[in-house]
Length: 317
Image 1 (cartoon, one colour):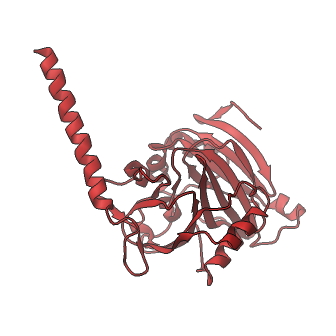
Image 2: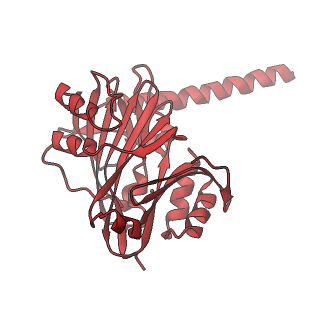
Image 3: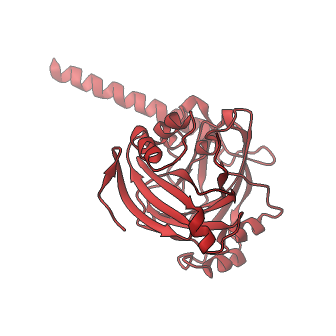
């Protein structure tokens, strides 16, 4: 039975500057009821969880007008619950935010014990993410607090997480959680990086819509928003549109924001044979050598393993 309240995530920004990812998303509720929650996988432990700026995501959407319709279907502490470690908790508007560390089973147990409704595919999806990063954000909406704050149905609460990480990545598979396999998942993904990024995904449905130096006016507007003073004078702006059936959405978006490093195949959550370059509207690959690069990574690993085995054999003799 579905919750009478639906908690939606609209647009997402993954901004990466000087080794730090700022992950900005907005939680939006519709309907009526008491509470509902969502879980979002993260690439690392946030050093800060705060309310995002009031117009950052709206300004990004305006930059790519007309914006497509989007629908996303997630004080220091040391306590544990159901095996998951609670790293951090805070309240932002009508949201109770908890940063968790644990495996898929442990995080799922914690979620159920705290009133989250998990769909039948949730255990598999949580395991899919916990194998790469055991860090999750649980966001729980409190309807009574929203009423006291005079929030109306459909109002969004932007959240910004500051996460030191080697490279950012954007969770996409989680967007299909609980949906029928034929249900179309529509999503906006905005990226801001110091250099033009290399992007790696898998399957169809992810299209490159913008790929250029960020306009000075856009950066100036973003810089003036709350918590966005870190935005430098120059960045690269990437906008991707996701339109894929939930059943085909079995991958994430891997990003390399460094000129001499390829995206991590592990960050996509898929095998090398499934990896596909992100293409623009005209069908051109953003990173044309992706297949060769991934093949090279696999071959290099195989050669290294062979050489190590041969060295051990020689030593034993």
